[in-house]
Length: 318
Ligand SMILES: Nc1ncnc2c1ncn2[C@@H]1O[C@H](COP(=O)(O)OP(=O)(O)OP(=O)(O)O)[C@@H](O)[C@H]1O
Ligand SMILES: [Mg+2]
Image (cartoon, rainbow, N blue to C red; front, side, top):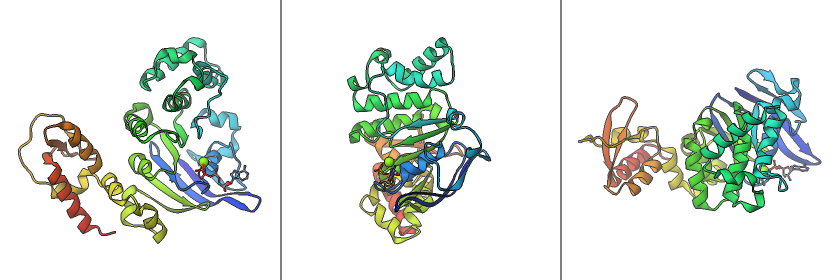
């Protein structure tokens, strides 16, 4: 759906983006991951022409983005700015209405869409008249997300959308984010420097360093098939938790014992081992039902999960 080829952007002697190419499939969530200054924001802003590349091409659905006026292009692309980008002297309603005004929606349509989004993002309706400064960081980021979702554009660009949050709020919003139907339908390019976040949310990751992509792949590919030592080193400090997130129940299915199942709701086996451990922690019964695409079910314990995970690790040495 989105194709970027050989993008270059230079500021003076700094090559902010140095020959970057990637593709994003329809409804995929591609994450640009890397340390501060590696060129993530610059890359993202080239996708909606807030920055023009010195050279290289970008197409969306086969159409060169340079061939349409930037304003028109941006109507089909939602954008969440780094540090939420809300106007401090506008109320929440005014901040969100920027988009419907651009699109010349009538008032009623704008109001009802705004109310719908506030509810989906768990923001009270009376927030509409508040100013960003009166909201917590997490609430501001939800407003930034609401603004980006307003026009229900098929493409969404997100620059560190959960950047300024504490770990607990962050992981709560990440879980909500994964469950939002509006987002499941979208093609998303998201920027983060947080490895855990990337592993939690990405279908595929572009790991960047000094204006280049060092590897593009699924979280599991980065972990178990690192292209160069840099990739392995980058992930090393948090490796165990990342493996729990990258390995799916499907991957370890064969290592889990068969046995009796019951009628409790089952966790789909496309979910990660990490998600299963989290659910087990909350279940209170010490067991969890899981179910694969063939509608086979298993009941698993913490010990069985860890043991199956360990067998997978032995078969896939890094
Ligand atoms: N307008 C500009 N003028 C000059 N240099 C710039 C400009 N914008 C970015 N740069 C430089 O280009 C490089 C990449 O910047 P970019 O904002 O893309 O990084 P980033 O990966 O988003 O970093 P962060 O995680 O800190 O947001 C940096 O070295 C930055 O200093
Ligand atoms: Mg940035």
